[in-house]
Image: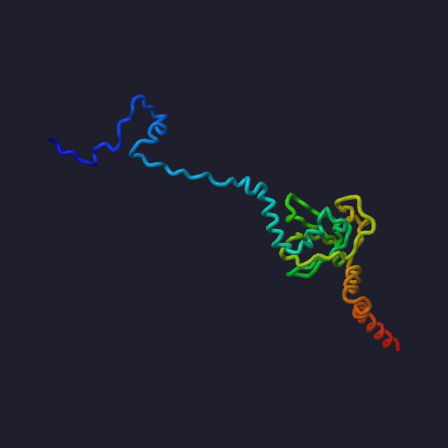
Amino acid sequence: MPTRYPSLEPKYKAPKSGFRPSQATKQNRFEEGFRKIRSIPPPRSTAKACPDPISEVTKAQLQVLDPTGARTRLFSDDNAERVQPGDILLVRLKSGDPFAGVVIDIRKRNSPIDTAILLRNHLTRLGVEMWYKVYSPNVEGIEIVQRKEKRARRAKLTYMRLPKHDIGSVDNIVRQYQRQRMGGPMGSRDAMGRDANSHKKKNKKKR
C-alpha cells in the first residue's frame, strides 16, 4: 500500500452539487475549515471632513502672516475705511528703507494672500513705481499717510503717469505726517533746526 503524505491530502471538502464559482462565497460561508475574512471599514471621506480645503489653508496662512488681522481689515471690502486708489501709504520694510507713494492699483487675485499694492513716488525727479505684497514677511507695517479727499471713479489710476495728472513727490506730506506722530510742534522744531542755522550763517556772511 503506497505511503500517504499529509501535505498531499485535500484540506477542504468537495463542493456541493450545483456549485458555481460566482456563488462560492455564499455557499461556503458557513462551512467548516474556512476562516472569516476580516473586513476593514472604508476611510472617512475627506470631502465631508473638509468641503473647502483651500479656504482652510488660507485661514491657517493668514493666522501666521497676520495674527492681529490689521492688514486684512485694511484691505477688506467690508471695511468702509479701507485703503483705496489715490491714498498715500507708507510701507516699512524689515530689510531696506521705507517707501511712500500714491496707491495706483490694488491687485486682488483668487486668494487674499496674493493681495498687492502699486505705489508711485518721485525719487530724484524721476517717477518710480513699486509693487508690495501686503502679507509679505518682509513688510513690517503699512500706514495711511493721507487719504484722497474725492474718491476716484477708477480702480486703476494709471493716468497719474501722465505729466498732466502726476502729483510729483510725496516726501513733504510724509514728513509732515511723521512730525505729527512725533509730537506736533516739537517734531517740527527739530526738522526746521537745520534751516534756522543756515539762516544765521547767511546773516553772518552778510555782516
